[in-house]
Image (cartoon, rainbow, N blue to C red; front, side):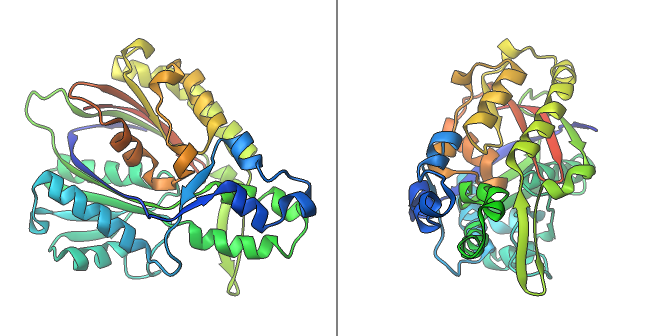
Length: 333
């Protein structure tokens, strides 16, 4: 699927919890060396993640998204009543029902229409695409797309289960220790007439036959799931290889035109793979995973915040998530 971008990012909002937790401390907690023969520095050495932020236990997903949303509104000099729609895109929700967007609307004291759009780590991109469609059709002018990466609660549950299981159980769930917490928000508005900035083209692909590669669910009150990191990476890389020539064609770009590669970041190898596939030098692909880990739906906004692009910069977007889903596209700042 190819999406035409008719919108631009008005502002970004980012919130990072203060607590920093090292990868080594998590591996020490599960006694990875003595019980499983895995060095305590495995996540640092193999994945490249040395630490991540973790919210205080009991934090609700909406809290991180609300803090990021306030920042985005202030930067855009917008009152909450100026929002036509609020879309929440986090994997974790405050409730099964109602949508977490309603909780955020209430906190912001806005009258915006609310909905949740979820698609694993690709949720923020899908939320942006949804907002783009509403704005393009003339049904909305200004949309807040916000998310919360609050994987620490799930991580704590899996750590408890890892402590009581064998190395076979750990092997397929070690990836959960790479995640971190964050909040992010994007305000999207209609592209100004004759403006060259904003979303360009976005290409999407989904392969439902690999849905079990990465999942978690609750069965009779107990959490179960897995994260087959190598399997996911291999499939998503193959999808990206098949997509990239079309992406450059639709954007009318070459790798040399790209000022930044901004991708969903799960670790060192994934970052290098996407650079090789896109032919964008690693120097133009800023990384945030070392200190923040895999912050799921917040990866793209937080990376954009980190690079602080200047007007006219061409940004290649790439990423994917469980499902399996993948995306590529272009953004001109």
